[in-house]
Image 1 (cartoon, rainbow, N blue to C red):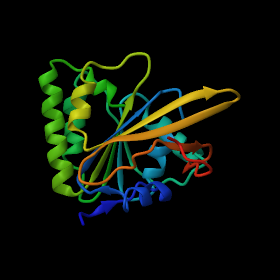
Image 2: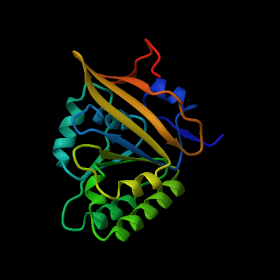
Image 3: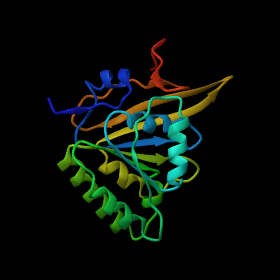
Image 4: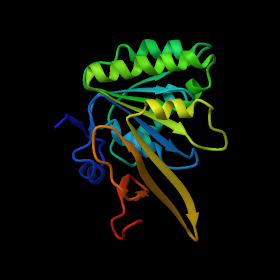
Length: 209
């Protein structure tokens, strides 16, 4: 069986036969008004992580990790700024060592760069490097009021897609996750109900169709 890399969420890893195949690009589609960042933070505890922030400063990410109620690691954090974020991100990605995590948060900033061919080139280089190093890339894609036109390109490159949906049902906030795409393995066929309070866990109290 292909080497699997844990997500840090034990129940989810069991559902994925041990984790995500090494060398994979994962897209985490989530509303910005959600607790999806807990997933990113828990991932940092599994192995060495390079955390590229496209919006918030390094210090803001560092403070969020420090104050997070979940178990986290000590990632290398870089704020990608300037007028050439694709070039700056590419330089950092090219130095990613073997069997590491890469988090890009959020990818939207890179998806909005012109011309589209430069973003496709970035994604091809990213895919090659992640595969060659046996690493895991998680691309946090904000799925809010506006979605970049290149999101289809991102999802086409992705090996695994986690679609997280947050809704207010009555007096509860409900989070559900589907895995509509999973190259190199079997994905759960049912939508998974998540508890996103202090950590990411799966609500197994009832089946979700």
